[in-house]
Image (cartoon, rainbow, N blue to C red; front, side, top):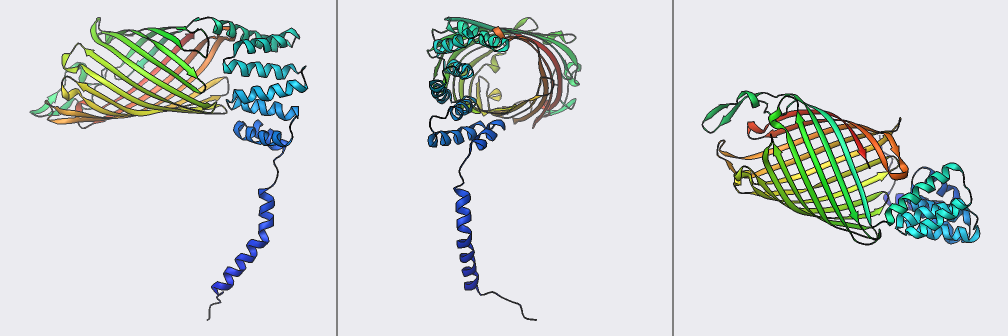
Length: 445
């Protein structure tokens, strides 16, 4: 039975003819003009960058259309391009000076740009026209925030009370008997098997910012008081006093801060650790949907145990993405510790990811993961080998604002969080499992 074959020259000719026939159709598809409905649909889907691109093209072809300019301004605002938003709203007001809704949106754009007096003028003009009650309340909140932002001194803080259940407070290893250089080591009662306990954790953080104008450099100082009180294992009670201070600055999409820090920690009412360090962080916010930060720090660790005293260096990259009702943040990098005794010196790779999403009942669902790989410099004499650990963590959280006063940014937030940890190591002593369930109430002011 003979097989029917098409000569390759004939096949190429057919393909060329088909392509020439389809070219006009493809060309018409490529050149199909964008419409107002396309931009409106993209905006309603939350695709603000696409909407902004569409409206910019339409405004270029049809200048002077107030409706186009208004949606262009709103798309730009939602994309974080506040300057474009202001220009678009100004064009609308030139044609329709009585459009208070547009003036309100322009005031919000001025506020985000840090042009507080221009924002105040826009809001006050709308307020003078007796808008609906809900609009008036919103404007009053903005005016109060402008008044606060206009002051050179600003205070903020947090008070958090938490109760946690921990099923392995001593980080006890999976096995009670550990292989050492000289044979089997049997652990004592306290650390031989995992001990569970309830922990009361209390945090007070106070921040002070001095800055003459939002666009000018300022100086930020923070104070943190923290303690963890164990119901049974009271030898683990921990307290910390922390202070940080240094300049902050902002220029366009760039923000930065340089902070010096000092922390003093006690364990079971005795000095455990003192740290002193410096941290530099620079953040670039492309728009409302994406930003990235770069952090570098150097810290001196002064442990009560002399052999563990060290200098620690850290470098992190911190990208964030936001879309619709979700936010994804991460940081990854490296940490180096140069200890007095090299068995405690290490190189550590870090990765942390957190995803948050608004869900029904005004709640926020959060999922997180953390991974770190630590390789130590010298052998641990007791075990005759260099330690190498890998830690993995997964977390699940639910939070909700149970009370708020938006006019001065005060709120009470509840958080339920569950964390599972698994540590593996080439030294059995450092292999453990751990689960922590915590509930906290935090008052932000």
